[in-house]
Length: 118
Image 1: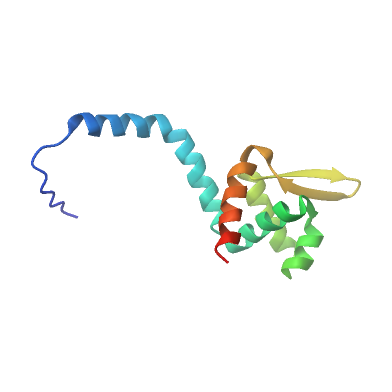
Image 2 (image 1 turned 90 degrees about the vertical axis):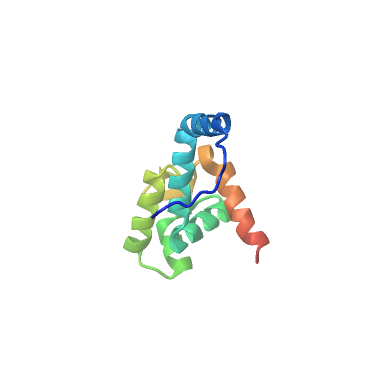
């Protein structure tokens, strides 16, 4: 795609400042992109919402609530866990899932935005 920029003079200081800032922010922006990518799936977003609301749930509870099979829910839980958005804790034979504290503030912002738009 051809660029038809009509700028007379480039602000080289601004360009270099922005490039430097992007390089410095690259790890944080990559993390944010990964989180947004994970929350972009409706089922995963519903799971995160439920975990925010209830604090912890087992896969069977989520299966009943979302009216999906346990394997389907488990697949989504695996992606969320691999992405660092949720934790799991075994209690006897049951595994409970909860929001990971390291990303909880950001997830709360995303989920509260959703509630405020309804």
